[in-house]
Amino acid sequence: MKKTLIITILLVSSFNCKKNQTTEIKEKFQEFPPKAMLIQATGGLRLRETPNINGNILVVIPNGSIIKTYGNVSQEETQQGKKGKWTRVKYLHYSGFVFSGFLSEKFDQKDFKPDIDILNQIANTLGFKIDLKYQIYLDSRYKKKYVKNFKIVKDLHYKEFRAITITPEINGCEFYGDSNCYNLILKNNSLIFHDINSDSIGMLQDIKDEKFTFLIEAGCGGGCDYSYNSTSHEFNTESEKFFRIENYKSITQCVNEIDMFTEDCIKCSKDFKYSNYSKIITQEIDLNRNVLKTDVKEIFDKK
Image (cartoon, rainbow, N blue to C red; front, side, top):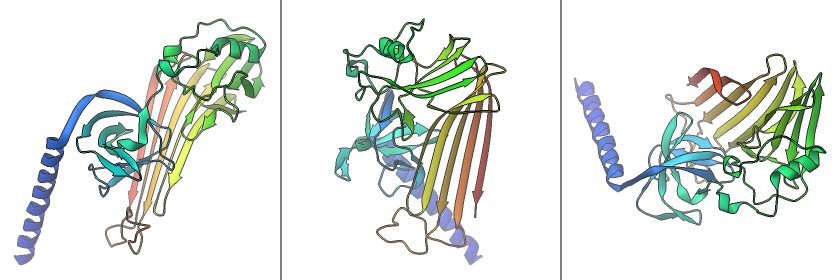
């Protein structure tokens, strides 16, 4: 009887605590229309369940990721020397808060360097002209580091197909969790696919099982957690269709003691040793990147 009473009191107390916490967040929350933002945080940015530094970590979002923000908790504060507010965001299947001091606005047309003609640069690099119209407002790449001499970084041939990756930067076009690469696929020397007027599909990796593979990947981890995210595009030369595969993994392990280096970790107990979450989204898409079919697999293992 006493045990039942104690459990009931704890449950009611926990419920009231969460209710009060939710009410407090709503009172401070300032909503605004969805806005695309770029994460600029070495090692990734922690997405927390509540808007404070001690909030439960839902996932670590890789540096360079683009997310949508939906509103701020009004009080400004300073974290790691950066001023900002706790901002509500959505990432994958998660919804929570990140600190806005590590966010910057997504590329705007005004940032474009007018002295660089993208289409002519690509044509000069290839050695032949390509029949398409460049539309800057559709090209979401970050262009501040562009140079005037683009280079081919990967060029693969298979039967009548040719796949090419071009870099507009000195140090390559593939970086943590994102890509500035321009990619083209030709068949019998005619252009059948490009990502020039859109976001990049990554960097060309290899040709295997009659498929060209392009990849973007990122991973980060601390003393007790690790996350990895990759997006690959596989072009099937038989069907002339793409398979877009997004692979996300998150591993959290407990620690025996909490100290200044493990304050974001979970202490080992009979209720928690580790958690392992993975999600794979596979989409069949056509050459215009229209989604034809989607398959989602999720695995969650906790001990």
